[in-house]
Length: 266
Image (cartoon, rainbow, N blue to C red; front, side):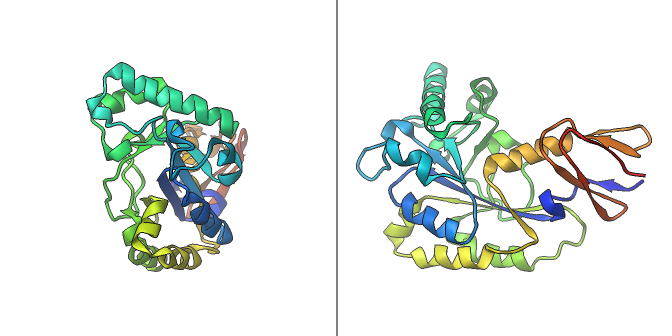
């Protein structure tokens, strides 16, 4: 039986996720544009900077990012490779605690301040409750992450229009999941005076039935659920122990595996 892990929720093969750092006041305008077009983002926030000039206030976090993901970015945005292990732990755990109080759910992801990390930093993250962390190393492809704790994005938002157009047009030679991952900072749109590029991108990318719009952590949870599927020796049955609905292809046809269900495939 030919079974492939090549589908996102809804049986689609493409997904779009966005990632924004720092929690600056221009997030307000950015979120408004994303919401208008049904796009979803992960917002990596420095809780120790809330209320500082140019940063959002603590009181607006929950409402502003509703429907998106609130994620960690350390409390005060240090260079982690220049920070003692104890300081790294304090920065991340302090940030998580503050953000979780506002978000109302466990914060399980982050992005590296300044894109700065090394093997020691990466090695500490699982013990600190971090399941993914985004780098700033763009690969300009639509591949899935090899290492969630050093998750390289497709591109910075300055390249999103060209790669977004390519993403929409591309027809893969072989069936596989494609992910467009764009990262950036909301203040850059203001500094560069090019908010129209975000509006153009959001209008171009929104409203496609063949694209799954997801936060970073939703991508992580889905990939984990796919890998957690349990097949019978004959591959004629599959059990999904997670709470996440999973889609796979069986002999070229989309097959839905509900959370907690056992499904006969053959």
